[in-house]
Length: 196
Image (cartoon, rainbow, N blue to C red):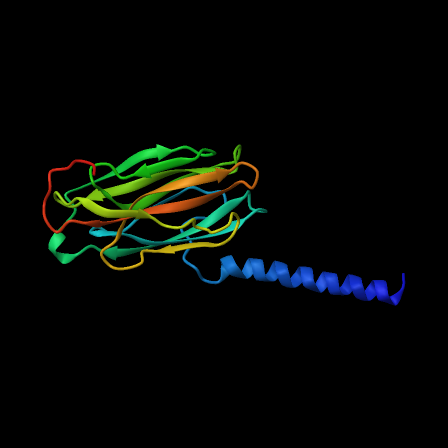
């Protein structure tokens, strides 16, 4: 083997090592992930708080799975304590779905279970309702992540918006999911609508 070939092989080996180290660094850098690869999880915000940020990191070699991290924030003082909390409908693995908390609820937690057969997860939102508050000015975020298999991050853009649910698309080829989070404002007064 010529010295040129040996030099090329060493360069490729160094490049591979650096890439692998960088990929490993991303998910071992002290981030507070709520799950391990291919493991289920149950995350709930402290009582009186709701979800305001979601972050995930994808790995094909770990079963096309994602590590997940969530942040919560206290609801406005005038709302008082949640009047009711519950686990909403389960959204099945390997399928596209759209889910909004019933009864005007806000997302205050998430649980998920990984399914090896489809290399995907099922999802369920933990929802809390505050008296008779109703959502308005709702909209969907951009795709998170923007492209499949990338790191994803969504932070509620300003105080006063809250996560009510999500719509997802699943790629059977890439074995990954993109999310559009459904964000709403909530009324400062009681209203009679059950699921607006």
